[in-house]
Length: 129
Image (cartoon, rainbow, N blue to C red):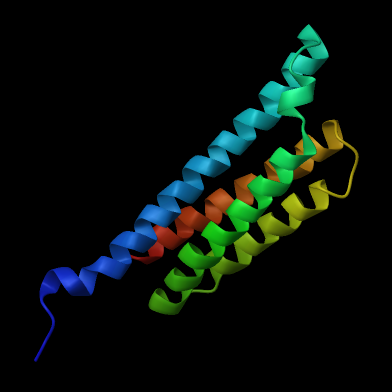
């Protein structure tokens, strides 16, 4: 007996939701990095909260989990390696950002990383069509 059409599409919908969540978090991360630098550099406020290393560790863990699930499932489903490779490069940049002191270098590495992860999610969403 075959499954109803809605049950067949359900994993794709979950994967799309995860890809969209990944895109949202990537954008949020980029805004966080830029706003943190601006607030600290120009206004001298917010450094304790916005530049807290725990935010970066949690963000990287969340990004890695969402990317692994969404992009991993997408790569298996549509058999395209590009989304996976691009997203993993982005996560590598984000991981590298944890190894440098807080400041401009960290922000640049993080923004490059989240940009690549976002591109990986976009490629994954396009591969689903």
